Structures are given as structure tokens and as C-alpha cells.
Length: 558
Image (cartoon, rainbow, N blue to C red):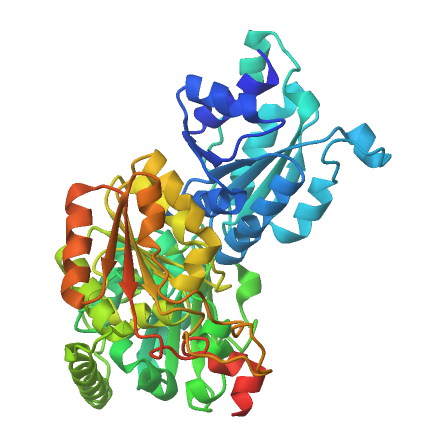
């Protein structure tokens, strides 16, 4: 048995049956042999998107997604996805072929020579290199355990070209493989930490729960819902936690997000981090007043990372929520009526404003009128996975489109990285077997648009909607120098992105009205054919950086 087959048998032994990658020296034969061995190989046009697909597959399945790349440039292309997976806590393994160690270490100029292990180490949870065929089983096992244990993340596995043709007696080779047992064991919180958290929660006058994507990844959906409903506490979901409870749930305070963040006195974070997406737990977003935080996280080092955590609860989400739920009995006090009433009043006010905005039907479409169509489609087909990226396209979709089922929303996550759209869409279609709706800003789509050929090649049930407003943020910027070149944020006017999909045999549709957009999306979902809809949006409708303009220093001074 050679190194090729040992790698494949190690993956199969551990239930990893899909590889996302791009063939080339020295791993082309590995992709061919993987197919022959019964693994599914999804081949992309760029390694970054293969890596994004592997990361999304890891989030959806709780098994590490596998990305396979060639050496040096291919490895570097996959590295962005690996780093992003680590930042967002998605279990993923990047496997790359590499040059021989003896040549790399002496810098003798081998083909695509690069010390890939050294480069990967700072950007992932763990990095391993396998030099001998008898160690392949251990190398794969260590990568799986590192990707899944504790806080999940990205792992790099370096396989030099010389490893693949090495051989072992077949019996010895199979015995060298490792089936990983319980890579992410339950980690129950300390009883005193649960008691402390419950005491703080019980004493709150204006309690709030924040659900993060860690809660969605945990797949402890029933327990999370039971805890929220048993306490009666208002909650808000971070974007990839939407659908853990339906966004239309009576306790959802998403429509009053600004108010509850400012006014809450005790906040319980379930799988959410106090990073920039929550203004680090301080400042104007939080009303300027000190809050008391309860934080549930598997990583003890996450506590106190921005503000003091009064009641840290360390363990896996499922175990922590179950432990808290045991302490919430029938006599648990409901939050004060004045708090619930105030939240409800602001919800109703803001929902009424949103309804009025969505009812307007301008021509050309703006983000609201176009997303009202998407909102209605998802309401009617809650099993659809919604993939979303862009600036305005991302921000408005997060607040307008309600989700009803867990892990049905995938977006740019913690880094806000653009270009995840097509990789995430492929992974969602492959892992769920159900329709995928990818809502893309025209700028974000530019990072990954060539992967529409991948959608067509594998005939995946993905409908891509490009919100085309002729540029980044908007298409009306001017060249401040007065020269002939257009402004850096402006694209070709009236571009027809739908023609790209037609070029590869998919369906392309140009939609200029909500009615046309609604018809095109529903037909695409019904037929399951790869479809790209060019949704024409008013080029004046956007705002710079969506709704985080303050991150652009010059804009913040205006």
C-alpha cells in the first residue's frame, strides 16, 4: 500500500468522504485515486474557494472539511481560507503537497520550494508534516483531533511529494491507521460556575441573551431553545445564529437590538464573543454603562478578553446550556414586566418602520425592495440555505431576511472577508442536498465569480443573486483628480453578470423589478438548475461600508 492510498484510507476510516480542492503537481493522482476509492472530489477554479467550502462544510457537519491544494502558490491561495476558518472556529484541514525537506532546508531552488509548515503555523490551530508512510495514520488523526477539540478551527497537514510513492505491506499499512475516538468530548462546566451564573441571571432587572455562531455550531438546538423559553429572557442572534429560534419568535429582540444592548444590565453570551461585532462590550453601543456579563465558551482564555466577565461558564455549549437548564425550575422568575414591555414597544415601532420601508417599490430597485423578495422566498422555503456577502448587501440582508431553521445562514463571519460566497454555496449544496440561495454584492461576487463554472460542472442547486449597483457601495463616485479613469469604487455600468452563468450552461436572468426577481428565484429553486440572477439595483442606493462607515477613518471625520 502506497502513501496515496494510506491518506485516502485514513480519511475514509474517520468518516471524511468529501474533498474540496484543485488538482496539480504533486496531488493530481491523489484526486484521481480518491474518486476511485469512493470519495467525492469537488474541484474548484481557485484554492481559496475550495478552502472556504471545506470550512463551511466543517461548520455544517461538525466534521473537519478537507481542502486539498498543490504546493507553494496553491497552498498560499488556500491559506486565507485556513486562517479565516481558524478565526471563525470552523473545523477544517488544509492538506497541501510540498517540496522535499532536504532541498527546501538548503534553499536549493526546488519546484515551488517553500517552507509551508512554518508559514502556516501562526495562522491555524496546529500544523503537522508527515515524512514517512507509516506516520500518515497518526498525522491525519492528529489533524482531525486538533481541528475538532476545544474551540474548533483550521489545521494544516503538509505532505511532501516523496511521501506518496512510499510503500508499506498492506496489512502493516492498515494497522498504522488511526480511527479517532471522541475528538470533541463533552466538557461539563464546574457546578459553582453554573450556580454563579444562575444567581446573576436571577437578580437581573433587564436581562438579555446573545446567541452566537458557536451556539449554532454546537447543534444543541433543543437545549438552547428550552433555556431561552424557560427563562423568558429577550434574546438577539448574531447573524449565523439566526434561525436557532425563528426570527419571528416572541422573545426575539433583534428588531430592538440597539435598545437592548444599551439598556440591559446582565447579558448572557452563548457561543458569542465580545469582539468588534459587539463593539468589544463597551462604548456607545452598550450605553456607556458597565454591564455584568455571563459568558459560555469552551475556551477559558476568551474570558475577560475585552471586559470583565462576572460569571464565566467554561465548557462545550451543549453541556453548559444543559447544566444551566437544570437549575431553571418552574419557579424561575420572569423578567420584569416593564423591561419586557419596553422591548416589545420598540420592536413593534421598528418593525412597523421596516414594513413601511419594504412596502415602497421604487424603480430601479433599492436594497430594501429587492430583499423583500428574498425575505418572502425564505419565509416560504425555510429549508433553503442562505449564503450572503457584500457591504450593503450583507448588512441589509442580515436585518431584513428572517431565518427559521438553524445553520441555514452562512455569511462572512468575524473577519468580514469577501469572496466566501461561491465556496460556501458549494459546501451547503453538497452537504445538505437542498437548494442554496446566494445573495451577493457585485463587488463581493468579483472575488469568487468564476466558480459559477463549478456550480454548473457539478449541477448544484444554487441560485446566485448579484445585487448590481455598478460599484463598491454605490456606482456614482467621481475621480477626485478629475482624470479620465473612473473612481476606484466604480465598475462597468450595466454589466450583465447573468451572462457568465449562461456561458457555462446554467440559467441566466436579468431582473429589474421585484416581480421579475421573485419569479426568477422561485423558478430556480423549483428546477434546481444553477442560476445567476443579475438584480439591477439603483446605483445611488448604497452607503459606504454598509453601516460600518466609521471603520474608514476619512469617512468617520465627515
